[in-house]
Image (cartoon, rainbow, N blue to C red; front, top):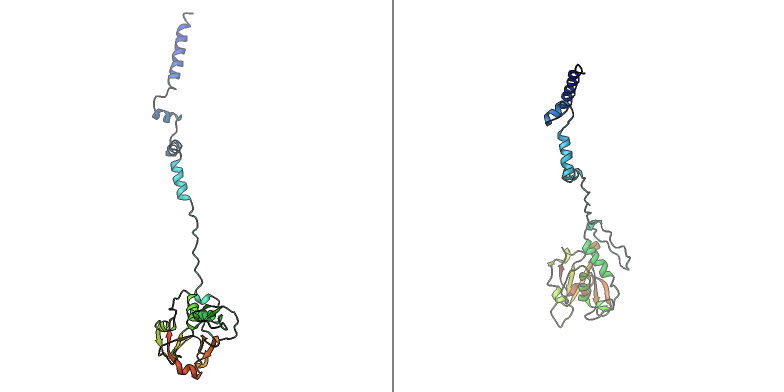
Length: 226
């Protein structure tokens, strides 16, 4: 037994040394022994987890595609708008470029045949200045109510220069030397100036400047719409 004791003690010492060699006392030692691995990726993952994934949100925000912006559509220009094709008893050749003037004429022709009524501005009856006032008002063009005051609006032009939409003014009351009548030019085809107006005896009618009566009483022509 005494001979076996040294062998027993030697075996115990070897076991103790082997066990102590497995104890890791530092991060560097763990790396050397291959039992610890570390990288910047692990650190980033750890920080993301600990910080509630803020880094991931930032990346997602950057990668997020912007939503398409609705494009504004351009409104149709005046030249693209189809003119009213309503048929009237009277027809004339209108200039496609003068959109507003043409539309004013179309609306004035709607009153053709309406009876005369002093101070009237509706289809129940209207006077000459009421016809002009009402027609222009549809297009937010405010004119004075009387023909005398309407003659002060716009630019005075020569009779030979008149176009569709211009106004013609007359003095047809021999007792008063003032403008008291107005008409709206609807056509100048072949040099024949025709206009729509409201007369005391016939109501709203179409007349021509070729008639002697209107040649004699004509005073001036005004252009309200350029």
